[in-house]
Image 1 (spheres, rainbow, N blue to C red):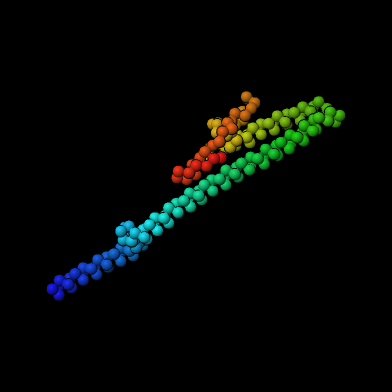
Image 2: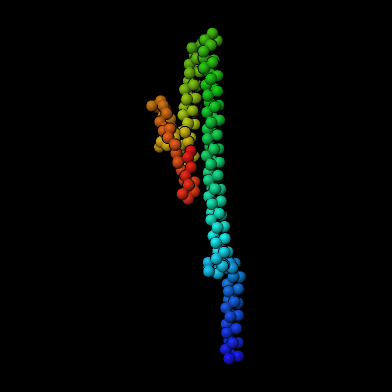
Length: 165
């Protein structure tokens, strides 16, 4: 009887030692939910919060890059439009400019239109910035107009969560 009790105690000690060694080698003290259900639920909750946080971080980074590209396009557009305003003001003053100078202003305005078209067709991650939900270029110089759609675009920002933009 004493021998049996001693063997049982040795087996229990060996089992605890193996669990301790496994905990140390893996860095985990919780191997399965039945070990400690409360800590298991807490670990799952923490893991889910970490995933949500990582997704929010990726979404924020993407949004910042979209806004940076849009800001650069807007600033470029404003610069082009300010120059066009200056040129049209000069061209309207017929007393100072001869026909050759006005032709030069006209050609500069035409090139400004090309520049503005390029800015309007700015892309971010291979997706046009200024054409709503339409595919392809937002502005077509040959057709002379806007080709985009003014619809709301929805994109997935997280598991089961969409954002409108």
